[in-house]
Length: 326
Image (cartoon, rainbow, N blue to C red):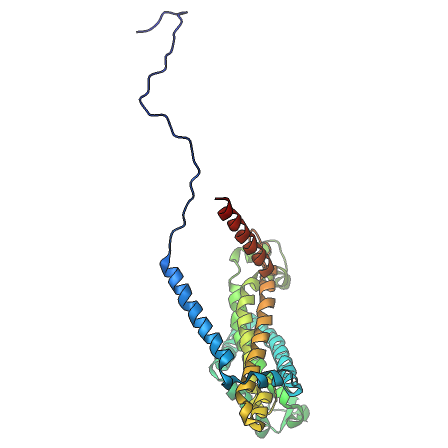
């Protein structure tokens, strides 16, 4: 029934039958129990403890002789040769890989064919075969000359005088490394979005400038982790230069093992630890290089190991405080 205009209407609250609500109390949310994770963690800890106990307590490892050989001059000299060979080969291999990758991506069919053939051949032949072939190269060509093909030569030189043990090792590793680096660089360049190329071309930028300032910096985000894996493999591959009479880290340990047969295991442990140190340093450098080139591609840079440690300690401290407050 409608009320006349100007009438006063009184609204009354309808009675409710709901019981009065209880006061809110904070309740603790219990995490989901995961017994499988705890069992796996316990098994792994037992296995790791057994492994460490075996390393420490087994007298066969002769840790006293390990400490004696670790910083011996002959080992350090071999380590220096390993670093030199790895550094020269990494630089030359990366430079050669960039050139091969650009040749593979060029419009010239001759450059594409030659680059593909080189990569196919060097990736198919074992590295030790390449090193031994270069080591005996003087038996095939005693002199090398530069001139017109099938015509007169401008000058020639004795190959045996230039092919030192260091040169053979660096050239062999660089040739092998360039074949793998070429595919790494080519994959990184192809990973750059095609819109970046189109935008650079629309601005009228020269091809060389496009590659140096736009394409290659973005490709490095993909190239860096893959090439670092190659670099770690290169460091370990330097142990093969012992077969071309170059006493690197492994060669020095092998020579000392022949002189002191009872110290073969400690010497192998010395080589293992030094290779672990070298690859760990490369991995740390890889992290910071990747972090540098991640700028502009991610909302926030990945935290450093120190920042992760501080965050973990902070989370642990907050958890302890919450446990104590309950």
